[in-house]
Image (cartoon, rainbow, N blue to C red; front, top):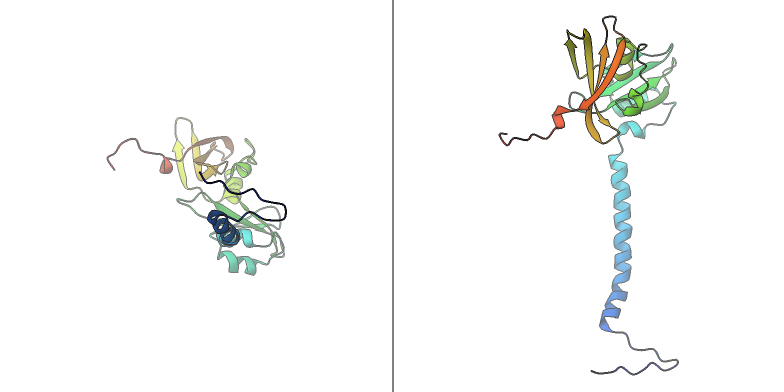
Length: 195
């Protein structure tokens, strides 16, 4: 085995070819990380939904319509407040709401098919009209004659993770009596291999 001479004071030991190559590649690796970071930032900007690119408030209805298009549903909320809805149904899990004051200025936007928004519903107080104006038209309606309940269902991602359906059960007077969350059958894994 060949021994390298000990480095003397003031004399540097010669670098091995592996060390020289490693030193030469260090700036390239740093550049690679820099490019990857810039690419990630630009992709994030491209993937930001249009409604999140709007100013938080103050935009005109024309500016919002230029960014999001014509609303599919429009409803009155509190006195002087109008809600524009942009649903992604029948298969999507989002409905974007843009609320405007009496002067047509944006008050704010939000994705209303969410756990946080569904938690605002008050049992024995909210009606079909309240549900319709807050969340828009349901993706599905049904009626259970034995329970004497009409049910409106909305697709959403529970806690932004699980594909689910939120069901609102109304009595004969159209008042919300109960709610229920179930898995969305559209996204359930089938156990058979027929299809």
